[in-house]
Length: 359
Image (cartoon, rainbow, N blue to C red; front, side):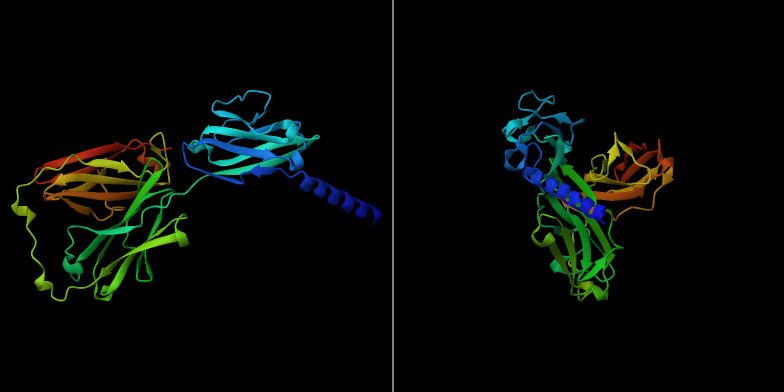
């Protein structure tokens, strides 16, 4: 009993000593954006107790190193920061923050022979995207905001220029939609991501006077998300549809050669896809009249599954751009095969190819 009590007292003393030696960090979390200059990360001892040595570990730097006011830094772009070891202060200044610096900065400090650690999270500050928008495909007759019964309503939701990308979800009023949507497609440039997703569904009587809602969820939005809505209203008389100009009476315009774009959200390794992951690519045919149609092949095999509905956009004066997304699970047997998107048009058929490699 006496021995157990003694052990308990010794344990409590050790815990108290550990708490007394807890390092202070400034800041607790460093919110940064890429290419920020002169970002300071500092560890300090309570009361400025002198330290024997200080070793720091920085995300993106291969190995830990001693951070000292007495020695030059062994890493370019990183210098010592603080009042020095004698005053219990040890830190670094990052001349320019890079993407690989995101993570946990750690300092390991010796105080009278006892090792104490501190940590600062380096986090890239989120950027709220623009409010989401719903666009209706130009081949859908929505004159006066009304739609024809039984005809497909093709729309896309776009969330532009956020970091990280927003997460999109669809609702018909309060009911989630899961079956009529395509794979999201991401485009990233200068640490801003635009995400878009297609919706395609024949309009039914039950849809009348309901709202098609697209929700964009993002950590930087107040409340966590923003929504946009498209009211659906059935046209009372389908025989009274407003007349539209017939593009087929105009002379055809040959579209540009199609392009294959890999979603920037898909992680690749030197252009190779990971087996078992999703390959999400988009084929785009721009500025033609009438709109081109697509055929997809993997070598000589025609692809049917994983294709979204084509989305058409009219470009004045009367030219049309069309795009389609393919989402397909990568298989080991895909290695070395060629993904082909053929754009068929009255002026001829053109194609674009992408060699697939896997790891």
